[in-house]
Amino acid sequence: MYCNVEDVSILCGFTEFTADTRPTLTQVTNLIIQSDNIIKMYCKRQGIELTSQIELKEAEVLRYLSSIRTAGMIALTYLANQQVADGTQAMTFFKLFNETIESFCKVMRRVTPSSDYLDDSFKSDNFLVKDNEKGY
Image (cartoon, rainbow, N blue to C red; front, side, top):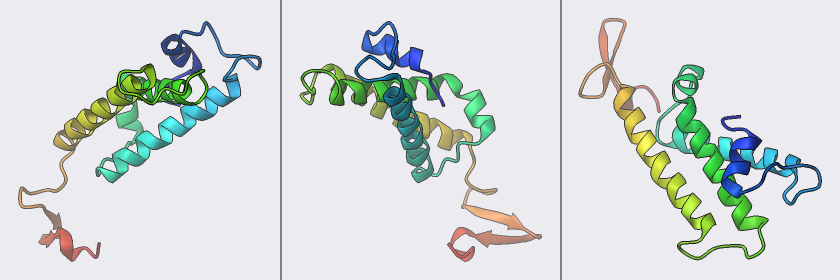
């Protein structure tokens, strides 16, 4: 998991999550896993494969993303007034998540070259192969 339960509890104002809190420790753990999967899916759709090397190098950003999205889900689904209006705690978390993941993906696209050459072609067995010639 990119973040831990303690990261989320700090954002939500809880001292800890247990089997007796609302949400429970298990529910928070499941929300963290869901947040991590959303991050991976979003990055994949942006053409970024989160390899173990990237996950290690960018651990703090991924931790932040996972914890604020999870805290937003808790504020939206478990706290008393299901906050959906602009400026509420839940919407603030989601806004921060959206802005940060978009910026993260932009930076990662610049850092990770998409091809060997500027015209998006690749070198393959001493021949140049265009993207659309690869079969996908």
